[in-house]
Image (cartoon, rainbow, N blue to C red; front, side):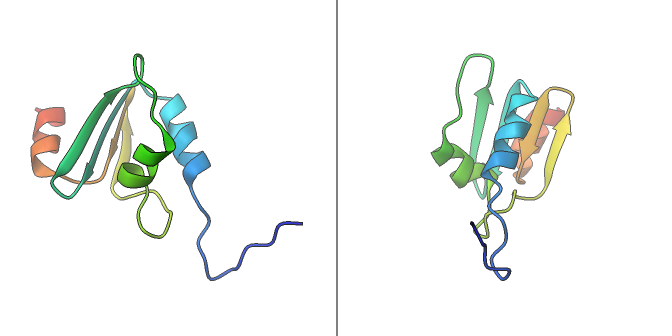
Length: 85
């Protein structure tokens, strides 16, 4: 039996992985750091998911949006300008 403490939010690693399976590109930002990953040729490891896709509580970072085959996580002005042109 696995019981989680109600005060601790659920870990969203599985949700992040399922989002990545549905898209071809990942753009993520955490402060001034950004990453761009072509998921057709690269594999995202758990370390990248924890660092760029999940916040300190284990939930998906906001804002997170899927636009066609592109997943955009976090906010960075330069990244948004590059993605949305």
